Amino acid sequence: MKEKDSSSGVYDGMALIADPIHSYALFTVPGESGPARKTEKDLIDSPWLQRLRRIYQLQSARWVYPAAEHTRFQHSLGTMHVAGEFARHLYPSLKDVCPDTPSKNYVEELLRLAGLLHDVGHGPFGHFFDEHYLSAWGLTHEDIGRRIIVKKLGATIAQIARGPSGSFARGETLDPRQVAYLIKMPEAGGGEKQPRWLQWLRQLFSGIYTVDNLDYVQRDAYMTGFSLDMVDVPRLRYYTFFTKDGLTLHQSGISALRRFLNARLNLYSNVYFHRTTRALDLHLQEIFSETLRLLYPQSPLKNLDAYLGCDEWSLFSEVQGWLSVKDPRRRKLALEWQKIHARKLKWKMSFATEISVDS
Image 1 (cartoon, one colour):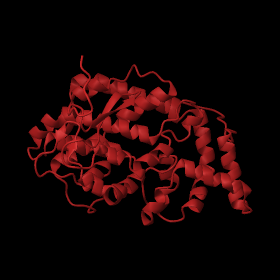
Image 2 (cartoon, one colour):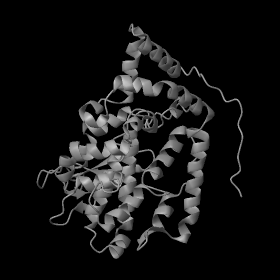
Image 3 (spheres, one colour):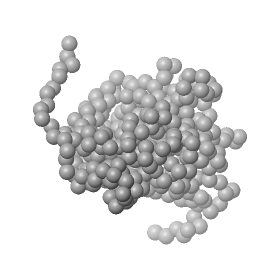
Image 4 (cartoon, one colour):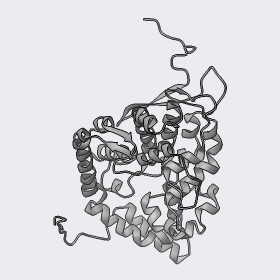
């Protein structure tokens, strides 16, 4: 067998990511032939995506499950892969119900980029950051993400002209606002009406099973050591299609959906709401808002450049420095953070009960 040299066009413009959940995931890179255009690699290597390496996927459960050190960055790559697989499968039925749908390659890349960027607005400790800091400004991480996508990554997105399956149709250009829309629909009256095909695609980011939770359920289970035997994403994807009513699941896929929902429920019971995880969350709740207000006194939307440095590494480093300051307020907060890092639990479960939801 002859070894192909680097000039071969077979793999030009494509590369592989090795992943424990999806085995291998394709992504686009600059090619040796054709015009110089931006690719997925430009977004992946951008400071905004690389920042997610410093934000852990599990806010406090990683102190309970030692192997659960995975980050929002890994999850974002996985979500991009899942989104691409759904796009390729769903395109024929989407085109049937929405004849004005753009080309298959455009739709695939649009969904992939929305998957890649759906968590770009997250702050340290993920959803905890939303609840105990961003809420003071009336914001969520999706609001921050939309602004980052349009204002900071929009120029790069608009210069991407192909996905893993090939180039877009002539005249097609990615719109960063469409990527942002898939992540979070604007408030009523806050944006122009989107075409129906785009509204239908948004259901892949906001339904019972999404390209987001289809990755994180598998990833969180794997990294915490839980069995994945019950999750059958290929079957669930196969029996998903579009009708005039939107995203639809064939009855033959209901068993796969049920298994997925049970797996997700088990993660909530055993990981996200583990008694030690909850104890850590309660301790964090006492100090998180005050700490973040001292570090970031302004709304993130007023200074996105400063938000680029808002991650868990910088948070831990800054708070560690407060141990040696004279300000008693900061020093007290630093001591509480030190207890959390040392897993010196302040809260204990005194009792537990189950409440039936049956009628």
